[in-house]
Image 1 (cartoon, rainbow, N blue to C red):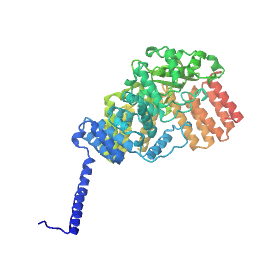
Image 2 (tube, one colour):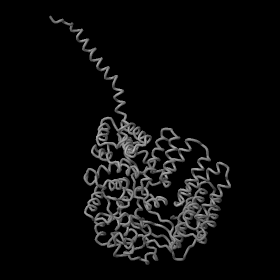
Image 3 (cartoon, rainbow, N blue to C red):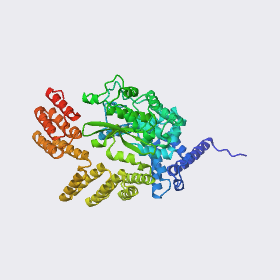
Image 4 (cartoon, rainbow, N blue to C red):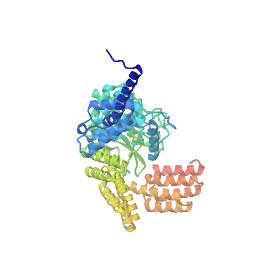
Length: 613
């Protein structure tokens, strides 16, 4: 006989049993969650496996990259602290997670602030940008996320290259477009894809590649990025490029993909410009110099079109020579830069290219006897000018060295420790960074930041700054920048005589060899007076600077000191005073009759008198 249990009791027992089981599940869930949020130490001692990366991407698809980033950050810190042989792999995996977890609107806001701070906004950029919900991960497909996170070398290159003024949403969207159009080529030409993404995320500035041709003849519009990628990748595969593009980093390929012409122009150049890597400087002299244009002050292109064939047929001035050569170089798969500068007779333009020995030749078409000031070139990644030290860094190509990459890692972890409020390990990591490679500018900056967080002692800061000044003796702009910080610290400590000596040392060191730096200092003095002093004092300061720093100077001093002050006076209704200051500059600077500086001064005086400045 089977015992009967009342139905009500059976129901109650079933409910209790289910509650008990659910209780066990809920009780065990925190420990399981904790386990899933921690990467085992033995795994951190190896490179992240494809299975791990796929699992991370799939988890992020359901829970968001924000749920993954903390786990990977912890793994990256543990890898660094246990001296794992795979520190970069775990660190850049964390960086990917952190980037993809960033809300789109936060990334947009941070980017706009960075552009404004760097002063690289320009009229060709949009006046406003749409906001979107969600994170940056929405820009990438699952397949591309797996591909990017699984390529440690490409990740290192990407995050080393990426700058605050790169629009992260646009960069990722361009990578997606390229991957979707050419998935097989993307695998082989990842560096090329990165270069295109950081160049094409923002439209070029209106005066790129130079301002002496109208927008009608040269529209300054970049072609679709996926087409540019396919064009050069396929050309390289068919051995149609002089440089092997798969061997070049994105930091150099960005000087290849910045093209202002249609593909048909590139095809024409490969067929009609004979110089190769061994003698490509000769491309500059293929364009006959039109001296009559300079004599007639026809500095803008007078032709009906600006095709390379037209420039070759009609000839041109230096800016056309440099444009022709640099564009023809890109057509042949050679990274090139176009420079502009000032010499004794006026403005000049020349170009540089990466030669057969993987060395940058930066003086093609530049005339030594003219004593040209250091040239300026556009950085296509930012559309601002490449600064002095960055040009040196590019030419030296030391960033590919293992010691420099190790230095970058130490600096990155110093920044992470500072983020955690741990100045002692931050200071130690930053010290390692500058010891591994003293040219790591980010390492010195984070070292100063870590020292300030640890102690307000100005003597410790002074010691670091003196070391930095010595480290960057080859790079005058950086030496001066750190020296100016040193002067501030010395004055804070009451060491005014030592501070004055340091300023005099710099002035004497670069007076003969780098007049551009003394001009920058003169311009800074006048600018300060324009902001702080009354008009009478401003004119006194201007006259003093003109006498002490302007004697025998030429067009660069005129551009950076004279013209801004003249415009400043005119904007305040002080036209007679502006004319007097311009006349004083004519009597002080080296102004050769009939040369460009003479013509520009005459033109400026006429505009002042007519009220059409």
